[in-house]
Length: 235
Length: 254
Image (cartoon, rainbow over all chains, first blue to last red; front, side, top):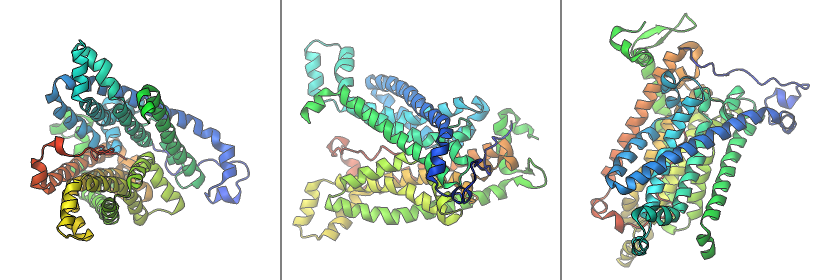
């Protein structure tokens, strides 16, 4: 296997009569306006590298949390194992997976999904546990089965905590996806590395990542408000 | 090239051999890999990580203790953790490289910035979680503000503070991997320069980074247990007050 040729030392071709600002690697609003197009593809890759892992991670975590809700003893081992995944540095994981999953999206995806598990699983379990016992009893008293209680009472009541977990997982994944360039999966990180000395490039690529995290955060917050009308009424 | 003993591990076997035995570089001419070189990278890696963690702790913990004691800092605690999570470590490092330059000082500065948010949030929450009745009792016994911080709030917040140290230490050691982008030769060196080290070097260094990070995580987890006051260990979890932003949601930045 050959090492990943990271585009280091390369420089962004700077056409258009390289003025002083661009030539000195400065922060040049004009260059940014002229070259903003080059950031579209990395930005879209970054969106994909965030949305897909969080969505897959959420599905896994929800399934695990529902299983662990009935079999409480599973919670400890699940947190322990996902905690070990979580502690492994993403850059290292991106290389450790390459002999198995190769260079590219799959490697990035496996690592990024594994990091969301701990965060989302913990928040779902916390949310389910924080449902007041009286509420559960009331639901059971009305003749609901355990299954109905879970899907109609406990999960809806856990929505705020689940959403909080999704927000943390999403902003974390936006940050880690910037390193997915080491898995050969592109994203804004690859654009940063193309010319890390060029201030305009670093500010735009890095800034887009921060904006992306903020945008996702607001979106999830919006969804949470829509899903929990009873909270709005109280506030 | 692969020794027969490790051959069954494939790429991983060769990578482990890379850690222990020198070989010629991909581009030829220089000897790379082997224990002495890896220990050198590890030493630099630990040096920048420890310096950054100590500086971050010296800045963040006293500040957060003070804010927590006054009870004014909910905003600071949530804002730092939110901003801290939103800024990718690679973007932060690149920002410093392009605006300030290469070298040790800049790398340590970046690592300090990454280490501060979890420390502030955890310390602040740790202090605020201390039972208000306990603090009132201490005040009633005539303790001054400083005494309350030192004898009541700090000891009871220690588990949370060490939780923050654990998160920050793991993040710092992980992020130090990309320090070679700023010309600081940490264990990321073989990862960043595949033209010399090849995939085997990248994989070998990744194995070392992963093992060291897991060790750091484990050590701080033990420390966290060790500093937990006996009284808190005995108290049932249900009796501890819940807080809007629990300390165990550890952010991950690299």
